[in-house]
Image 1 (cartoon, rainbow, N blue to C red):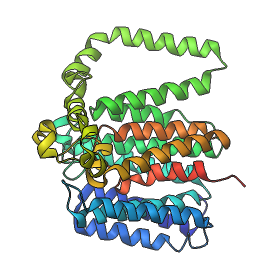
Image 2 (cartoon, one colour; image 1 turned 90 degrees about the horizontal axis):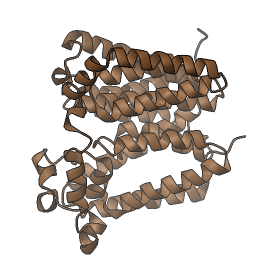
Image 3 (tube, rainbow, N blue to C red; image 1 turned 60 degrees about the vertical axis):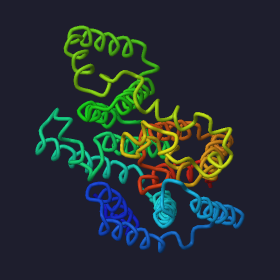
Image 4 (cartoon, rainbow, N blue to C red; image 1 turned 90 degrees about the vertical axis):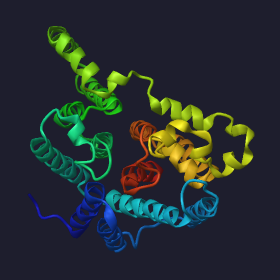
Length: 360
């Protein structure tokens, strides 16, 4: 393998700091994260950003600080730390966008994470979902682990598209298998959709191949139907059905919020509105609700503005595929409180920056 420039090495160290943050948690990993982000400033010091973009960004940051004063759920100083994660994600994403070999980098971080997961599966036991909770990532469920894997495959998929290379099948197949082992509904569904989409991209011009693959899938699926249905009903989160406590959390949080302007502007108190969220340890299992409870309507408007603007730019610059990947990523945010903002936002920021960046 050819020698990689320092930006590749420092970018990988920065990625590792994100992974360590989730694996171990605690003050030390936070210091490692911010130290690695600070080191990346050297590589983006000559990055040309328009003054109006910088001004808009600073106004948004100041707005987040202001609205966090009024949060009924989160203390102000913790919210300031969350804002720094947002800034760190942008710095890291800018650096990743400047990598010369994006495909090599995305494959490297993807497969090293799979090796880590294999080690955890081996030590904890394969198909032992209860043991995966809190033991793969510190203090969080296996759903966050599968979400991290999904973000890596989306990052990889984006880079193959950016470099105009043919999408490989193996990473998508492995992602689906690992998501099944991790037993999460959203991860299984999204990884399956990605796998089917890539199969379609690769074989759409070969009708015989499509018929063969589809027939083989149907035969295999029919043969193992009893085992498969039993597995999904008894082992995975599908046993809870498509409607889950997450739906109740959303309904409770939004119920009547339009009639209380203070709650609409500055976020609600979980204790006063949301029995289900309180029952599950004050965790709304939704990054958008979590963001609204922390930063009020300012957070929500910022996300909606970013989505709307990125859609327009994706049409102008012909980057609709990247926008679709961004929407898949944001969909995953809607079923767990682990982003918007946190270190994992580097991947959403990466996609946004690429969409907004005019090709030379």
